[in-house]
Length: 156
Length: 204
Image (tube, rainbow over all chains, first blue to last red):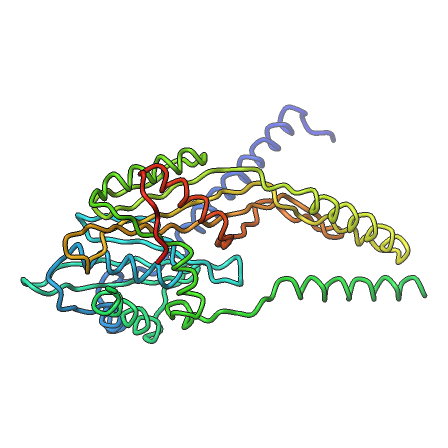
């Protein structure tokens, strides 16, 4: 009638093992089941990127590299940006601005200045709004207009 | 029936009020890189010119003045004449604590009348970081570099503590950022800097 208690205990234990094992297998399969799709062209330049790079880049007829960097700093300051980092040897300036009167939004910008040939400088600006890149062409046009002023006209 | 109506009305009005706080006029990204009428006024408040050839001296004097004011210099670049400094202070104000207490008191009482938990514990400002970003550079058109210009910007970041709205908990750490536009702060900075370099600062 009543089964051997020892055999009973063994059965429960083996059932527990079976459950644990099937759980582990299910987990393992779940890991295999949805392999993330591998993007092939993750780092390849896209049409869009080239367009944005063109928007963000402008070349100026100025031979003095340091004057160009100082011009960038001045333009950013005039636009209400806080200069956060500046590196002369690399020609790099980073600034940020609060999107006042909204107190929780930030606009960040990184500008690099690189010489092209003997008498020209390429200026590239990347702007972000709360971690999202700004791709609006008008934003960059506005920036370069101010920069042009501070480089050529702004020297009172 | 009646108290519930009052409760619902209360919740509605308070949510309207709160909504009013959170949506300011939205700045679109087009406005970020445009000079505004305030730009020139800000520039003249933040800028002074000094009759000196020694740009390095001006920069190190600026660092010394910031140190006197309790700032720690966090970033610097000598060749571009750039300095950034920060100091942390408490941001607690009695006014805010009183408002928080009153709002909590009345919202609890009104909520109890309406039979709902409408207790509102407003988060208050706890900690702030005051920052300064400074650039000193020779004025290019002067030719011989006999004049230098210093421009400084003060701004602050404020972190709020925690709070509660009804049954939901408002976690601490909400951040607020703002420029400091108090002209007296800039005047006192430049007065100290002028003394430090034994020069009279000239307004632009």
